[in-house]
Image: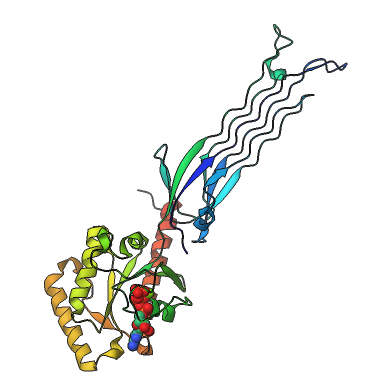
Length: 348
Ligand SMILES: Nc1nc2c(ncn2[C@@H]2O[C@H](COP(=O)(O)OP(=O)(O)OP(=O)(O)O)[C@@H](O)[C@H]2O)c(=O)[nH]1
Ligand SMILES: [Mg+2]
């Protein structure tokens, strides 16, 4: 089970207390109280494991160690170790106290999220020409305490969307090594499934139903996982009474959730094409194109075709792969451009 939204409490370690002590030993006479150690800080660090938020399921109170108290004979207490929590790339981290928000976008990215308390000074450091026997010492400072909300926005390249039972998981399994559960009833998929097609991450999300954007079915919880995708694959069943209406209903749910989803390049597939006679497929494809030209001006510039596919028709799956190869190529180009911009080679 993927954990994608969790609130945790972070308490950085307090600083250790300074010591106030006097030595009577010859050669070391006077104040010899050591300083405390600094408290441990807490960091987040990005990793590629999308399931990493699972560690917080039963571990919501996280504390870094305190610094050790100062000791006699000028011995300082040890600094506490910092604590590093590994969170998946694509996690939006919101400090609920300060409202600061940032995102972990890269593997190895490290962010300080709760600073450890500073050490307290021992009485040795308080001596001066006017006070050679200070009794002062400091308590360590408190480590920071914050509540954080961690939300995973998966970074998939292609999102599969459509009504329940249209074959989204079956398609994912055919294209990747994913072993998503497939069955002939609605809501078989309860959590998003990911699969890798070479360098592309494909995400199959639970089926949407009308009203998903307002919380019906399982839909809305998972729509955030497709906010970041490069492209969307709409999967419409050939067994549907009205494939174009299905397509429009799914789009409307996306529109109500976040208009930006409609701006993504889209590809539309007519699944289970083997269940319908070829003449009917031809008719659906023709009607679909016509309706889309008339009623869907938002997709100007995109292909208006619905592409028949079936998991038992290998030639049709090859067509899907050609599209994925094209998306993979575009991704490579855009990653190179992003790197170049980041390295400052392109500078405007
Ligand atoms: N004949 C035929 N059956 C298919 C095809 N693709 C999927 N199916 C069947 O359709 C049913 C639903 O498939 P799933 O892949 O579970 O559908 P889904 O869209 O993931 O469903 P949800 O997870 O409920 O949203 C299963 O019984 C599949 O075996 C296809 O191309 N042809
Ligand atoms: Mg499924």
